Length: 116
Length: 116
DNA sequence: ACCATATTCAACCGGATAGTTAAGCAAAGC
DNA sequence: GCTTTGCTTAACTATCCGGTTGAATATGGT
Image (cartoon, rainbow over all chains, first blue to last red; front, side, top):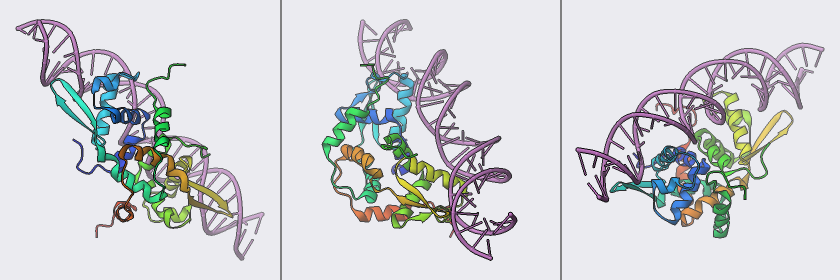
């Protein structure tokens, strides 16, 4: 049920949740089955399933069934509109990919952080 | 009470509301008093005041009192972190400012649209 | 056919959020 | 000092959101 042109509302509110951002980051590396997406988190599988539905509705991922596994893959253009919108404000210089790496490393709330 | 480094959570959920995005777009043109920000919208002044507080907490605007007027101004770097985060995914080509213009024109929900 | 695996759905709960109106507070003007 | 103007706070309501558990559905393996 992903809209043809998901609204900025849908996109930004999908991004507002750290678990969902973490999921996106994971999918950046590889397509994954729902169960595998859920594995690193502490919340229930059902919760992750809902998160994935939200991401799909926002056009940020696609889910396609093959056999009994549902593969989740990043929808590469999903962020485009939002990115256009944001950059319009900041006229930011091109993004430093190292900054991005830092974000991914820093901001992944994979369940509870083990206390070192 | 704007955090020194507002979280992506705060930023994205601030952006998730169309009224707040419209406010940002207005402030892009000029600094404004709260009452003037509220004018084009149908919701109460109190509601707009709260929206502004959310934007300020997310580090997207600053409010400073001069006399009895509180001026709202865009915080130019407020979107930087979020922008970094997003571009990391899409490696989007530089943004077309015309696209952005189109967004602003299209997506401003200033109160109820008059039914022409 | 039966069982295990993969995922969603349904019902529910608690806390956040967007809106309201009414009262409160601060600064300027008379 | 009183009033007006500009804005926030308080109290309340309705809705949304993220989480839970348990049942339901779908596919594959034996």
